Image (cartoon, rainbow, N blue to C red; front, side, top):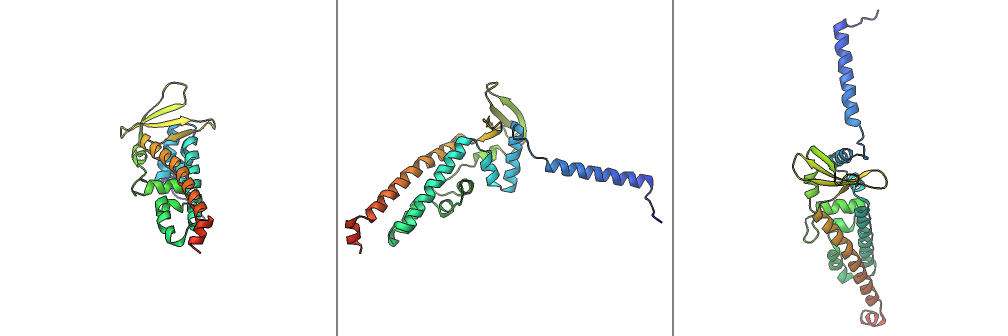
Length: 213
């Protein structure tokens, strides 16, 4: 014979299970990236997990494109140095391209993550964005109205910027000094790649080949 719990116990068990299910649903709720608060929440979740791919995907398209091209140019420069430079010159040439973690990043998101982690001279990615995005939201306003540009004021007091793009989603705009570094590395990646290509041509010239049989 099955023994049923007393009514009060059954009620308590039902309430506990309902609260557990509600809490699980809240924790598993996917942020709505079509709203400023949703994108802000998505960044905070990704940062807590250390998911730089998710953070990279939240960036505005222009920044992602710049990071992608920079990463591509850097990988090509490193490949040419490793395959075409004289052995005695490779180590320094690779070091001139940047720290190993940055050079060997397999994809743009990993490259972006490496920039965020390192503190080498001339390659330091400001962590101001991470600090500014770590607090709870206080206010959100579209400025000017109808522009798709949002200014979010967290409890920390540091305003962050979001922008609605053609995909209908709201994306993150890095801090100005982060944008400056990304833009600088973008420009330098073309200069480095051209310099490496010119050096490779020199190494394979008849005169150089004769000097280094």
